[in-house]
Image 1 (cartoon, rainbow, N blue to C red):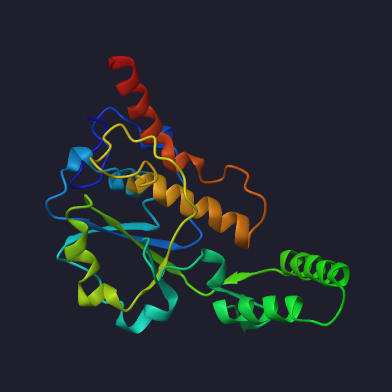
Image 2 (tube, rainbow, N blue to C red; image 1 turned 135 degrees about the vertical axis):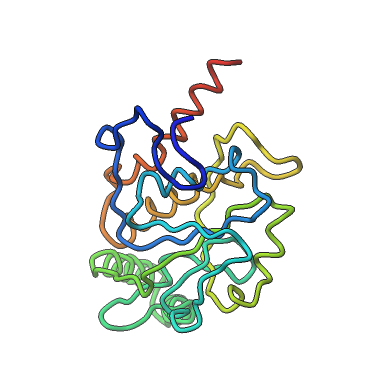
Amino acid sequence: MYFCYSCYQYVDGIDVKDMPHVKLPIKVDIIKHQKELDGKSTAVHAVMLAPEDVEIYSYPIIPNYANDKDQTLLIFPGPDAKHLRLYSTQSGKKRSVVDDVVMAKKIHLDNSSDVQNENRAKKSEFKLKEEKLNPTFNKIVFIDSTWSQVHSILTDERLKSLSRVELSEKETCYWRKQNNRPNTHLATIEAIHSFFQQFHQIFIGEYDGKFDNLLFFYKFFYSLVKKSK
């Protein structure tokens, strides 16, 4: 054991100064199901590596987001989940799905030629990339549980009012895959890393590996599992 799953402290013999330390641009809350086994959970990796910015709550304990729901996002897939880019401000205006639809109609329903429309679309896309986007949120929430446990947390009234974000699909490397679930269902620490990778690309610039140390313990345990096989 390298750290305590309850008090989130390194065990004796490990110098915290030798461990990676990650500073995150926004705060992270993790709602961990009370029946989720500590040894199977990767949520603790986040709080060990980014202790100033990550909090873990054992369900049914959930913070009160009522006064901050407009600045808080729930990272979980679903029919009402949107792309992270849509939770941003640009030139003082909040982007929305409606804005993107209107932009598309202006381009495709114009009476100009197809070539002119294509050029206008490219210019619009370039302009969006050039103008700096700012996030409209300052906190994100992840759920740490098995897929059979997640329903009780998702339907909790304290979370139902939060807007959802669905991350771009990536395949998991987790060695404890859940039965009958696609390999795009990520472990909690994988999802957190993926979020901040996308966050950097959208709001800061080309990703430079700044948050890769979030996977420090994940990669370490992954290598141990591979060696044991």
